[in-house]
Image (cartoon, rainbow, N blue to C red; front, side, top):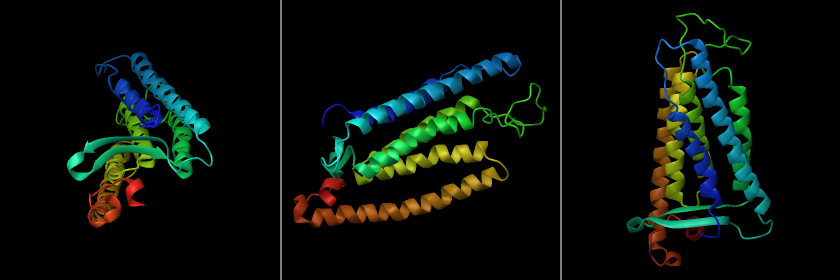
Length: 237
């Protein structure tokens, strides 16, 4: 590890937010509308607060980033599965930092944009009527924003991973919140769209897994890695 684990913190903040939001106590079905709105407001404000905290951490990383310095900065590396040379390894170059910064900036924007639409009972103007039709479905607001926070963690992990296997894990894990968000909070044939999205993504993921295994086999045959299989970018490049 090189100094303070900034990248781990950047990914852990939204994950902690997801856990906190998920632990908000539920309300009985016959609860007053005001109580339900108050609980939903807590979930929204918590999501916004944790997304802004993540943005602050990412801004600190951006300020500390040294242009012209090492290829990968803020590096962290811990042995995860020693038998296969898998590491929990993170680091950023200029491109990865830009992508992480874009994710951190866009997340508060997305949260604010969906502020009045997460329930699924909003009017076209974006406001929730005081007495929505009984047959119009409502969605769990805290679940929606919890999934958003988990998605942010996975995005940061994808862009910060410097171990190919870890990258694959983050990439595939990112599909889970996206699947539930599309299937539960989408419009039209959302369940069909969610299943189709998941199947196509998993198919692409299988092809990626084949390529990752091929990289591992190639590295095990290479003298540059001491004939030990590795998934680390630093040894594969």
